[in-house]
Image 1 (spheres, one colour):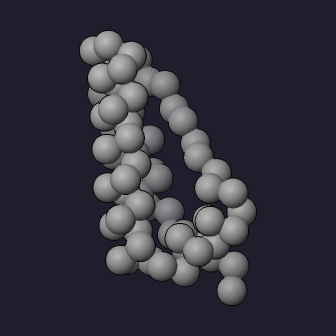
Image 2: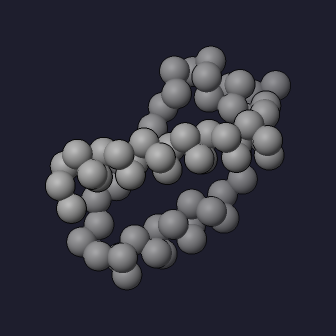
Length: 66
């Protein structure tokens, strides 16, 4: 996949995640916007290496400042 195609795919995924988060956890989105929209990137050698990380991240509950 070219760098441009990868960037486009990341952009689509980011927008989709944001739209879902606005619906499901608006307080967390507001907190994320207040702190500068921090992001975490991860490079994995394969899908098999990424899946356990994704499962662990999905199990975390968002912590939102009130």
